[in-house]
Image (cartoon, rainbow, N blue to C red; front, side, top):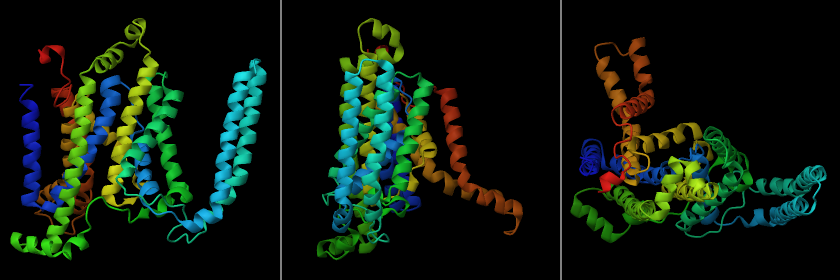
Length: 439
């Protein structure tokens, strides 16, 4: 049964996507497919942290947002005027920050008396803060004043956006290293709260530091790794293809672009699954499971539990950063206000739990299942409410209340699915395989 279950689940997902294509539109079906693929990568990252090592990361959206920021820093062209008026002061602020950190490190290493060391550390932090702000504040004011309706930020490197996927993974991994150094070793519930809080801090910075990401003004018009619809519509070969298919060039161009994205995303997803499966089935993966199941026993056998946790935490965060950069690439814009830690972190967690924590294919199945239902629950709920109240007049208050509440069907459906899976298949749709199942 275990061997047939993944085939049955992915067959059902394929049928559902085809049904949406034939019943609604292929544009909607392909949009769901692309978001399912990106969600699968997010679920793989969280599964690596939670399923492999038992680390309850509630900061999923923070790492995803850093990946999204990478899309701006890599693909947007630099704003020369902003660099001219604020670049020097910003560089000096960065230099002062490095000097301050260096001084504090030297103090911590050289001063032996604990009370004096702590006092000098506090003085160093306070002095460094004011020195950095002395250069940073004028730089920010000058940068954000440069044509703030269109720019007001530094821009990026002007490179192809595909490079941002690697940079997004590096940024998220670097942030995970800092967070892990501070938070790993805490009790599981404290660690979860710490990651959630740091995620909120990251997103708050993106929303408020206009010089970096334009804040809530958003950054639009990011470069694409696939053709633009208008360019396809003006190409003779594409016009001929549209005529052969018996549809307009506009409709076919939209579908062609979404299929192009899907092909790239599938390649990345399959590569990550291949790497994840090899890692999970290697001695390293078995060691991570042993640490997850019994930290004390693993530590008694000479394993450095904290370092291994840090390692897997960085790897999972890097995958989340990669997914964030891919999502920004698909959207063509960075909208910091759209990163909702409590809302979407919950959805990614449901994907991993429903799919099967500790199983890479389970995480992918959970991502496809949950995101499909998340998108389709609202129109299905609206249809259901209209059918239930079809005998009532349109102005009836009860009918209007039910129809307006249709979007909340998403949350109801997510909760119902989670309860059903935990009741009847507590290890998920595709459970983690045990040694007996391998044999």
